Every structure is written in C-alpha cells, then in structure tokens.
Length: 626
Picture 1 (tube, rainbow, N blue to C red):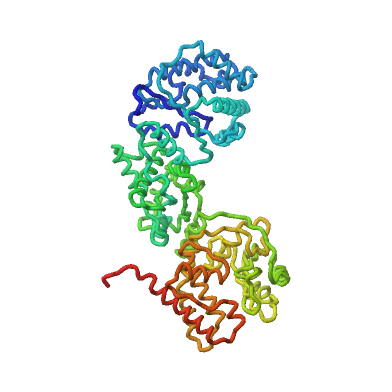
Picture 2 (tube, rainbow, N blue to C red):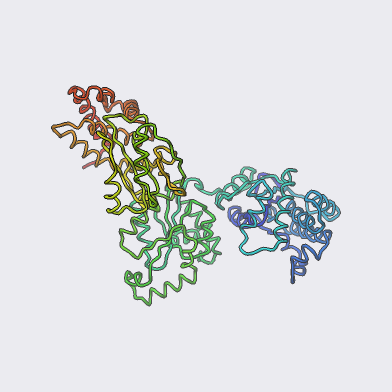
C-alpha cells in the first residue's frame, strides 16, 4: 500500500465534471490494495429518504444548514468506519465541508468565507471520523473561480437550472479559499488535459509519496493513435494497410488488444466491461505495445462501439484521431464477398453498438465510395495536415522590385485568390539584377485553364528578367500536395516572409520541418537527373547549374536538421558541415562580375560534380551480401 504503516485515505476533489470518478476508477485498477469507498451518499440510508421527489429542494431549501452538515459529516464518519487500510475517496473531508459551505452560502445568503466558517463550527460539534493518514488531491481546470465554474458547467450533458449554476460558482469560490489556506495536500492543474495525462500525473505523484501504484508504460512516447471506424466493407482494412505501408504506422486490431487485456485481467469476455473501461484497458495495451516496440504512431481497427470510441477520444485528447469511412450501402454490397443479407446482419449488429453514430464524433469523415486513388489522396491530406498548425500570416513590404510586385499582385488577385507569395530571393535584398528570377506563388480556390491563360499568361514582365508564376489550388495547399521548395516557401510565409496578399480570413497550414525535409529528399532524384543533364550540355547554363548546386546542398542541410538563408549562406553552411564534399564553387559575386570567365565555369562544374559524387558515397553505410 504505502511505505507508511497504518490506515491511509487518498481523496480526489474538485468541481463537477473535472474527472474525479473516472480517474479513481482507473487508479483503482493500478492499485490492487486500494478500496474505492466512493462518495458519502453511499454510507447513510437517510440519503435515500431525502432524495425522494425534489432532491434539489431538500438540498438548497428544505433542510437547514445544520441538518445538511450533520448528514454529510455522519455519512463521512460511516465511510471511514467501512474503509479498509487504503481508501480511495470520491470527495474527501475538505470537499464535504466545501459542498456544505457552498450550499450554506446560497441558503443563508453568506459570503464564501462566512459560509465556510459556519460549516466548520457546526462540524466541530459532531462526531469525528477515525484518525488516519490523509492525502487530499484537488483537480482543477483553472485557478480563477469564475473560469473554473464555467468549465464545469460547459461539460454538463444537459440543461441545468440557475440554482445549480449559482452553486457551482459558490463551490469554486470555496475551493479557492481552501486552496489558499493550503487545505489540500496536492493541487493538479489539469486544464483541458486528456484523461490519460491526468492519470499518469496522479500515479507519478502517488508513487512519489510511497504508494504502490503501477506506472503507465511509455505514456509520453506514443505520438498518434489512429482509430479506424465505419460500417462493414467500408474500407477500414484498406486504410490500415495504407497507413502501415505508406506512412510506417503500426497496425493493430482492437479485438486482439482487448482479448489480451482480458487475458491479463483473468476475464473471459472483455466486452462485459463497461465501454469506458474497455477504452482505458485498450489504451494500456496500446501503451505496453508502444513501449516494447518503440512505435510512435499506431492505428487500431475496427471501432464499432460509440461509447468506447468517445471515451477513447477523451482518454487520449488530440493524440487520438478517429477516421470514419463513409460508404453507401450499394457500394459496400458490391465490394463484399458475402451476400447482401449477411452484410445487413453485420450492419445491424454494429448499429446496436453505435458504430454508425461514430460518424458524429469522428475527426475525419472520408467518403470512400469512389476509386482507390481518391482514398489515397484523402488519406495523404489527413496525415499531412493533422499535426500542423494553422496561422494567419501578415503581409510584408518588398525590399526589391516593389513597384512591379505591387502591380503584379493587383493583376492576379480576384475573389478566388487566397494568397500571393514572392518566393526565393524575390522581394528580398538577396535578389540580384541580371541573375535572379521573379518567382511568384499564387494560391486560388480553382485554377482553370481559362483563368491561367487570361490572367497568368497576360502578366506583364520586366525587360530582361525571367518571371515564373506557380499556381496551386487551396485544396492542393491544404493537402500539402506541392513540391519541396513550395513547402519551404509556405513555412516561411507563416512568419510573413514573402506574403504580398492574403485573403481576409484565409488561414495557412504550416508544414512541419520534417515534412519539408521528406519532400526535399523525395525530390532528390529529379534534381539529380536535371543537374546531370545541365552538366552534359555543350553550352553551359551557369545560372541553372549554380541553382541546382544550391538545391542539392539545401536538401542535405535540411536532412541534417539545419536551415540556411540565401544561396551564399547555404553553400557556406554546406562547406562547414560537409567538408568531404569538396564543394568550393566560385562566389556569386564572381560569377556575376566575370560572367564569361571559363575558369570560373570550370570551378562551378567541378564543385557540382564533387557534390554529386559525394551524394553517391553518402548512403554507402551498410554492406549487403548481394
């Protein structure tokens, strides 16, 4: 039980809907020696009498404060008498007194402090509970009483009356006074933390006090749990396979994990557990597997119980993402190897468990009635964007080519245009006349050929400067269906870099560093091919070779986890961190000033050739028998 001998009580306290009962029920399974004694109303038969009819009237109106305190305190004493060595109380003595004080504040028109003093005086004259070591833990979402009460009320399943609202606010004030008076041994500010995070914190704190509490395995290691749901033949297995094969996700079956949990608990049927307990035991098995396999992302299929799935979301919070595959009946019948009657029978069973209602709480609903290509694109969008942040970037003034960029933006923007960016060195001090291009990125709701010809094709261009306009739809950008260089431009745009226009209300998804790195390495083959083509040309395109050399260096630096600025900074950083590459091209200033110097061209070709050879050596880090 504990390193301290003798009986002990641990209580969880806090406003309604803060999770006391849920946390205690889960904690009990991690503490075999504990005795869950529950709330005081289980310990005196008089509660059944006063709860007949309008219980709220008795609580707030019909009883006197003295009668209320007397029943609460005698119930608490009876609870202590019936408690074993280690008791887990749902609302301990401080919370019993707080509930009485909040009620007295309403009933007797007292301040919270006055009501708490009155309740203490009344309790002093009543029989006291058996002395034992007590650890009282307060769970709260905010240290501001008004916010705390609003948080409790916002989680009510149904409508509540004004009296209950007033009570919750009064109770929050009393708890704040008790907290200031150090009534509680421990205060856990849980905020909007998921159930799992609070449970982990509880177990760690209690273990630190010497209690024998089983730790949650690898609770922080797992980054994502994909929950796959849908009716029969909706494509859950296909999505599980795609997550495994294309995104490296560890694929698991809910039924298998629950069977393991039942075996561990000595139970024959895991589905005899309440659905909330199923979700918690399932979560523990997921954590055990993640701890043993070092898996960072896991998918589980097939979710067919509404209550268990909803509780799973509460357990994991944002780390859990439910994907519901929505497919019409005719398509599912066509896909099934069984008869339509058998399929409907399976559907009926799942509906009884609430499988169809999971659609209401799913994070992502995917229409999987179409071809496999549509499913792959939809899944790519979900996986690519689920961990990113959405930002509203500010516009910045261009430092070069400002007049032309202003005219070009005005020409391109219409009601469907969401974003216009200057990319690369465009609009920055790094732009070099006679060398740099003017590169624009336009994000538009649609991009039909007629608009491209009429608007992009008609854009005026400064004399002697190459202008390139890349156009993507908002859907393309939302799904990050763009090349690596565009991903990097989007990353910079979230901090305002290059933003020439942003439609009011348009929020930009910020790609992660890892996504940009993977996209760059995915582009590497095309860049290598193009670079070698450039080197093979008799008439060297010096500018293109230089830019491809910078691209190669940038990709490797990003793979190293490093960012660099303009082209000269990229090459300098690359020389520092990859000295074996032999990358010593001429400076950009030299290439600009001595544009026809053959020796400089040869130096650039040699540097590029060295980097290509270096790349060819880099992945020779393992030997095979073939």
